[in-house]
Image 1 (cartoon, rainbow, N blue to C red):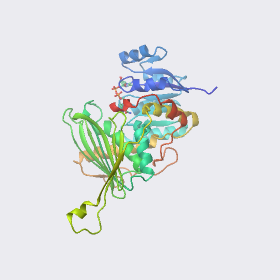
Image 2 (tube, rainbow, N blue to C red):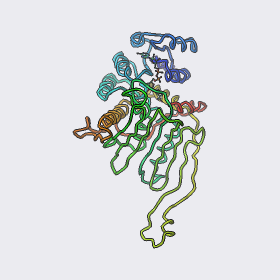
Image 3 (cartoon, rainbow, N blue to C red):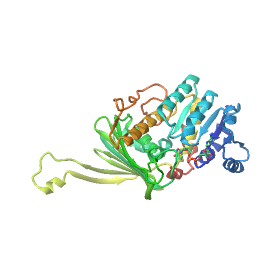
Length: 382
Ligand SMILES: NC(=O)c1ccc[n+]([C@@H]2O[C@H](COP(=O)([O-])OP(=O)(O)OC[C@H]3O[C@@H](n4cnc5c(N)ncnc54)[C@H](O)[C@@H]3O)[C@@H](O)[C@H]2O)c1
C-alpha cells in the first residue's frame, strides 16, 4: 500500500481551518496535528476534528517525527522562521501567500528546499481555480489575439491587516494570475497608496506593472470600498475577457469586440464601421474548490517528487514585485525598475525546478476529479 503523506498545519485562524477541512478529506494524506499558540483556536479545531493532535508550541510540530509535511497559515512575518525550521527538519512545506517578508528570505528557503530535495509550494490559490485555468487556456490558444493589457480590481470593506498593507494582502492574487497569463516578469512596477485607518499600513493602493512589448497590467487594491469587487479584464486585439469572481456560475464572459481603425474613411459613419460588435459567450466551468486542488497538488508533488505549479521561485517573483511596489510607494509612485540602480535585483531567469517561467497549469487527473463536488465559493473571501 502507498505510504500516506502525514501533515501538520500551523495556524488555526481564518484561513487555516479551510486548509484543514480540505486536507482532511484528501486521499494519500493523513492530517495528524494542528498548531496554534492561541489555545482557544487550537481547541476549537480539535473539537471539530477530535482525531487531531492539538499543539501550542511550534517547535513541537517541527520536531514531530511522524509528520513529514507542514502547511503554514500564520501571519506573514512568521512564514519564514516556521518554513526554515520545518525544511531544516526535513519536512515538505506549503506556505500561504505571500511567501515571506523579503526576497532574501525566499531565496534562503528555496536554497534549503533544493539542497534537501523537499517540495516547497506557495499557495497562489487562484492558479488552481477553474476560471483562471480557462482564461490561461483561452489566452495561450491565441483566441483573444494579441494581449494588450490587463486591469484588475480587488476591493471591499476590511479585513484590515496590521502587519502587511493592502498590496501585500490582496494584490498577490492578481499578480499571480497576471504573471501566469503573461508568462513573463515585469520590467518595472509603480505603486501609489495611502494609509487612512492604520498609520503606515496602506489600505488603498494602485499598482501598475510594465511588461516587455508595451504590455501592462493595473491592479487596484482596497479595504476601504463600500462594494465588494473581484474583477479582471483581459483585453486582446480580437476579443476581450471579463472575469467576475463574485458571480456564482458565469464567472467568465468572452466578448467578441474589437476596434480596427480603417486605413481610410471620409465620413463619420464610415469611421463607425471600424468597431466590431460580435457575440459574447460564457464558457462552461467545472465547479471545483481551488484550495482543494492546491492541497491535492501539494500531496501529488510530494508523492511524485515533482515541482509545484506555484513553487518557491514563483513565491520569490511575487515578493520581488511587492518589494518593488513598496519601494515605489516610498518614492510617491515613481517607477521601480527591476535590475536598474533604483531596483534591487534583476528579473529572475528560468531555472529548472519551479522556474521563473510559467508553463500552462499542469493538472493531475486525481486533483481534478475528486474536488468536483466542492464549491468554488471559498475564494470569494480571498
Ligand atoms: N490564499 C488565500 O486566498 C488566503 C486568504 C486569506 C489568508 N491567506 C493567508 O493565510 C495566512 C493566515 O491568514 P489568516 O487570515 O488566517 O490570519 P489569522 O490572523 O486569522 O490567523 C493566523 C493564526 O496563526 C496563529 N499563529 C501565529 N503564530 C503562529 C505560530 N508560530 N505557529 C502556529 N500558529 C501561529 C495565530 O494565533 C492565528 O490563530 C496569511 O499568510 C494570509 O496571507 C491566504
